[in-house]
Image (cartoon, rainbow, N blue to C red; front, side, top):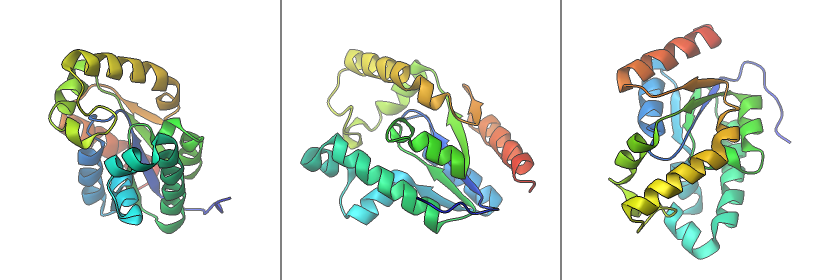
Length: 181
């Protein structure tokens, strides 16, 4: 059980891989003068191996347990932080409830064609899609988005299709109002 702190300022960016969570997270954290954590990079640092290796050697179920433990650790250790989560993070082990309890969740929603365009640039770094054809990738993204829509839909703030500056402005305005900055 994580003790509840008053005045904790945490923001969790959620959404499908390729939605731009890491880009947005770094920009917003810099603008607010807050810390920034990419949860996948945090996991790699703690585990001393990359996500692909964890998936290959231990499987997705083991990765999700590690992901949960690292999410809890981030919640305990940090304040005034923007956290970019992996695409599946809010969809397992009641992580979305945990994020909503301790912070603000923001779902960055992009249409499938935009996600596909972004994902094709670095598929080898993403174990769930590495080696897929364009048709396989499109089917995969469409199916996963459908499976995850209930979890993503629990976010406290949702931003649909956007241009980067518009997105940054909307998120920053929302956070300034929410945290009375």
